[in-house]
Image (cartoon, rainbow, N blue to C red):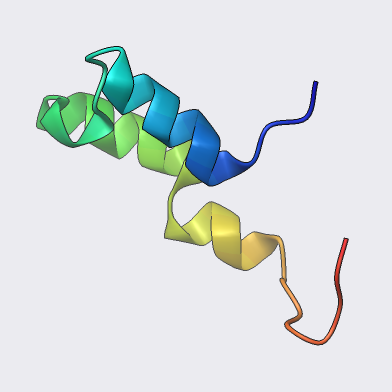
Length: 50
């Protein structure tokens, strides 16, 4: 099943696992996976759709 990223994070919050509440070292680690550098590397193009 394909789930939108926003839905994924909404479900985490609903389950009490809000990434905003993570300790700073964990936030820094997770930013390597889904932080701004990762998003930039995806090279999204607003003129295209999936």
